[in-house]
Length: 346
Image 1 (cartoon, rainbow, N blue to C red):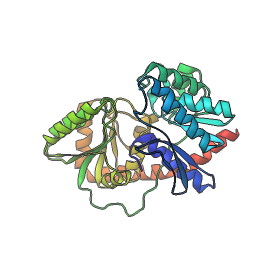
Image 2: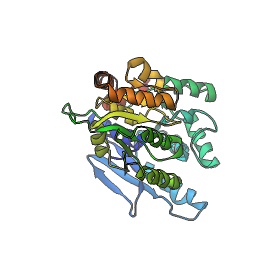
Image 3: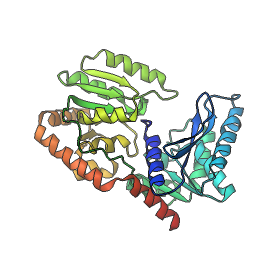
Image 4: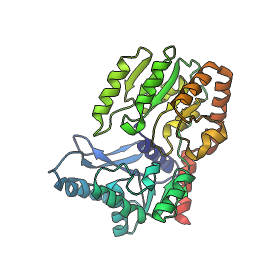
């Protein structure tokens, strides 16, 4: 399974819809060869190969033409798309043409603010807004996103809880990683803050996991170089989803240093494995109100929060137990899938 946010959600939802008896197809980008296969009972159809075609014209072919061809081949009653981008508009247009239902899922708070979306091209920003306004269901990750969409776009939306893969009870007993940081390596994730904290806490072991993003490879290389200079930091780069979970299960504290988020999958992965979170970002204030970790106000407080949790085993394990109970009670792939179905029937 992929490690990045919305791809994880889509795989988990695909499996959940299949478990409910529905036929499921997933449209993906192609590698060196076009794909049309069945994986775990889920049909996989490639749309286009990234970078193929003539610059400027490649948007029309093979990208747009490939997406429409793949969506048509899927021949679904309902189409689900995330995150925000030009594909939102293409999917919405296809659904209007074919009279099919379209669900758009907000993946980040900035998706809800005009001009703030992390979308490079003006064309794709306009396509996104076209698709956003024409979705039959707009699902958001938090009440904060719901209010942002209403304020900035005048759109109604619905909070749908994230899908989560429930780990087995026999979690790793050895917590040999003090602090783990997992995210894609791009500037808004502020990985340099993690390295700064590691420099100030030389007696503790930090592990950093994450792959490069197209257009941000220089940032990835810089973080990798700086991490190599710290003896207490292990930089692992991008890892498969299952391996990420294995490392989280071995960790004492999960650290998030990002400036921009939605509701990270990694929060659920940590909570389900009894790992408290230290993060500036707190979706709908659940970390604070539910006792799932610590939300500091600045980097000095973040340092103090890590020190507190790493030196107080009882407090850390108590918060970890609360976090797992909260995650299991509120997040389920099947429950999320059923919620989407109920919204389409409403």
